Image (cartoon, rainbow, N blue to C red; front, side, top):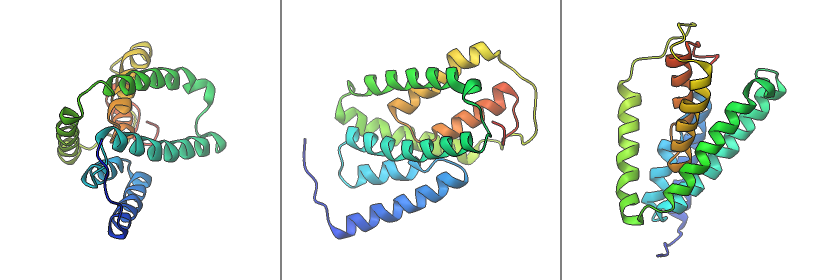
Length: 178
């Protein structure tokens, strides 16, 4: 494992990126699409960059979840099994990524980020109003949610947007409810 030099310029760069990413996360999600490349460009090894990105994003997600529960926008009883299956998927992804060669990971991460960025730039806008349900609740909870959780544990950026898109496209929920 190599070491990298921490300079004032690097700290300012990472600080500005984190502020921008936090602002983007607040509005629409996807701030990890900025922070993860910034961390890797800074010379941080890929696994440390993934872990750092995951830690900072989990703080934001945890705060948002707490506020949603506090304001009674969601009920724990309605989402506890979904949260569990997402967590199990995430654990599996986190476990597996540790066995991928660092050089291969250094190639895979930018490719995945570029594909996700292109998808979000050119994908159709999700419906704002409720639509038709295309998958059963059981399949959604036991296949879709753990799959997105797996991606989240392995890489992470854009996960919140994937959950929203899955809710709109597969469960027929409106954008806000999703």
